[in-house]
Length: 130
Image 1 (cartoon, rainbow, N blue to C red):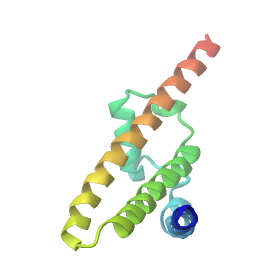
Image 2: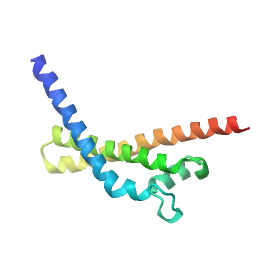
Image 3: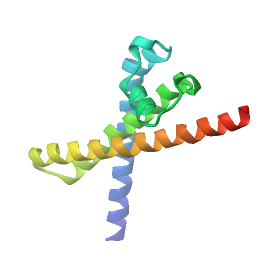
């Protein structure tokens, strides 16, 4: 019995890794490659969201690094939602409802952590600069 549980968990974890890698490759090819240079008119909404919500100084954020970090976060959100929805729910209406809830929660949590990280990092750089 325990072997089947471990095997099932490992299968789900392997599927998550495969889905994550495939989604990241697609995300990189279609979005990240084109946005690595800062253009004030074509900044992603995640950048404005974090800057306005956490009152960050745009000039102190490494834009290229930010694009890669958001690509990893967005890929995690999509892959995790896919695995939870696909593995746990059968009916499409429940998949849709839980998918929306999971995506909203993961966006709030992941970008909240990223915003806090940038706040601490900017404060640390500001203290060293004085």
